[in-house]
Image (cartoon, rainbow, N blue to C red; front, side):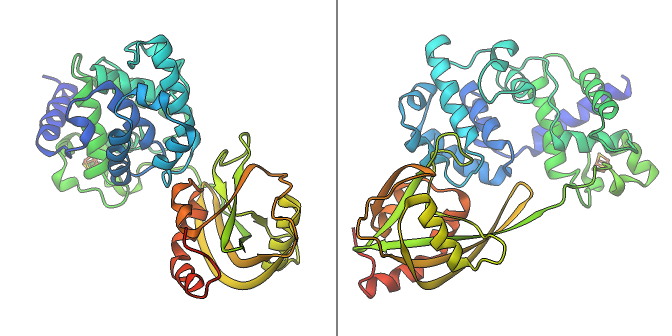
Length: 370
Ligand code: SF4
């Protein structure tokens, strides 16, 4: 037996004993693997599990997704972010029901042709759902290989990616891709951690070149992270006759089709209150008055660090029907009704933060019960 075979054997044995009981591992049903893989893009596994269970309770198969409205889909997805993933799931479900008898296809090329499924996800579905011999290389696997083979240059560089791909192909034991790929990913998630790898618990430590060279904590070599961008934004909780104004974003916009309180970035020299008045005028035609500062929330997406400043506002315009320029639809809703609409993460966080304020405003008769 050569080292490659020994590494496989050690990994497979370790995975059998140490794998986490993730819900999609109960049956490896292709539908479950597809949904878990899409949810797992850009999202921590701990969060994926809860969303996955909620999702499958509401949408047990592609047909139930294809029948649902985008509003329903967004509501279950709310909080996971990157809503284009939810839109792609819906588009893919429609194609599956139209062309694949409502099932997930077992051909790599067919999977690649579906919205939201790229080479990585297609390989993951092929190997995890159908146990076909496709290597799967995510960030965890990259890190494990960068250490196992002590790669001294940035792991994302093309020659290194190629090297890792070749190694993954040559190590992959035929007919065992489902467990081998997961063993590598699980090792990266549980033992070969980004900081402080637990080499004492590692089933392949005797083959690890970085451990032997004393460079494990310097691998993988990463590219310099992109600089973060700080943004200051203002938004207004506009109350009129006890109800709150919300609008639905345009279909071709960032956070398409999600609901929001109007607002936007502060312009140079502008205060938060001035920005809110301007944004309402531009986006709705409303003239509003700022009544009270309701505080700030901070949230991040991609490289952006956003501070969102919120103000309680009242309507000064006589007409409560807006002229929308940045939205497709609007509603005047009671505070409790906000829970039924899907908002971007920043606004959802704001709503949660404002719960005590809302209780006070209700007791003062400013906002009404539904
Ligand atoms: Fe990672 Fe340590 Fe195992 Fe090497 S020995 S693969 S660094 S956990």
